[in-house]
Image (tube, rainbow, N blue to C red; front, top):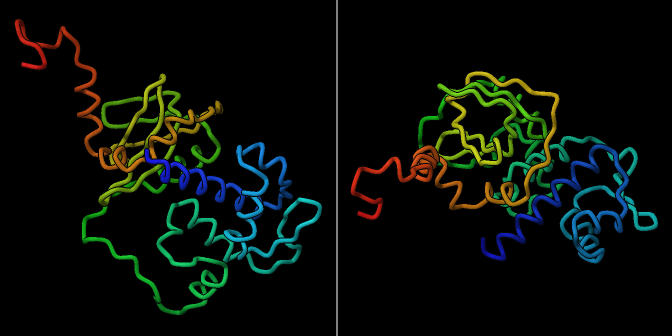
Length: 236
């Protein structure tokens, strides 16, 4: 992944976590945040001054929090959703004022257009349970077409060309399941810690474009000498 993409991913994750904590009512101390995100305090101050300026914040002795009685949370909910879903960059200068204007509109002032394509049907309950499991870092029991995955660690849901895909990890290997093939999801009581490199992989453009072909790629990679025809090699 190019250096600029890695920096963008780290920034997007950092901002989304900061916003969600502030909305949850936490008071954030700069020095602790700097240690947690492995950035300088100066970088964090820049985040708050320039990138989070739309939030109604108060600062006291190096600690930030949402101002008490800051008003309706609708705009903050929209902003949090936009950042966490990776949609914030679509809207130029997305801030609390713009979010408020969009919410106050009776019509549809903005339209995000995609090429017409059928949307693959997905169970709302399956989708909700997977989002909940990803948010809580909880393993799941997943039943898909001809497959049972017990203890799967769900990492991210990705929408591509009209289809949702679940990316995760099972027995140390990355997995990809089209949501249309998933019939049932049970959230387990066991939690997991996402592997950083695998989590970053699921944000890379090349990986995302390959999602529809993942099962074929996995099958090719699993071929061994016993799978080859006698007297032939894969290179022949």
